[in-house]
Image 1 (tube, helix red, strand yellow):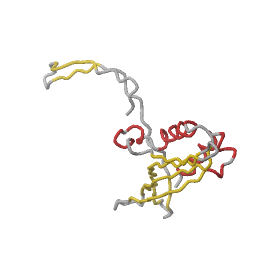
Image 2: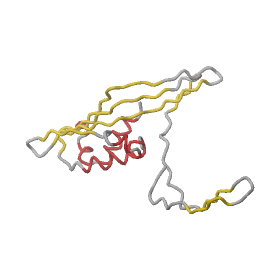
Image 3: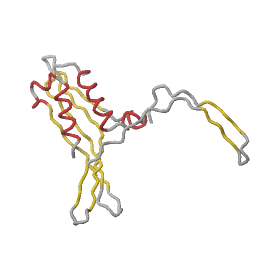
Image 4: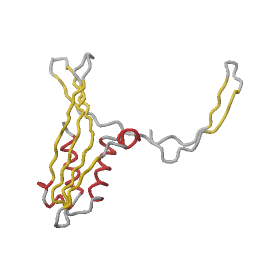
Length: 166
């Protein structure tokens, strides 16, 4: 699994409060599952809940959340793009300490694809592909619907997509 270390590195480089004492950030993987099919290859997918625990954190919570969402945008983008998935995706709990610090626990569902290919010499090539990225929607386009004889049945200009991504 690559994402737990990737997230750890990202947050440590982004958040000064954590960078001063990185041992206050603990990462656990819970509820892990592996999905594999009977296809000819041995590729599979990890599915798990990543729990991130920040102990005695005295910084602003926004300084954690914003870099976290930036990482998720690249590494698990469907959690942000799919409203059904994201309404229960990001969970957190905080224990307020006496010294204006908190113990903060974040829970994030993650998946990781592992592509396994057998090479000609019999060895296995293992790759961890990046997540598919969403692309900006095309600007408004004119459309024309023709029948079999070439007669125009309908024509219109598509709606302007604004900031939509697909």
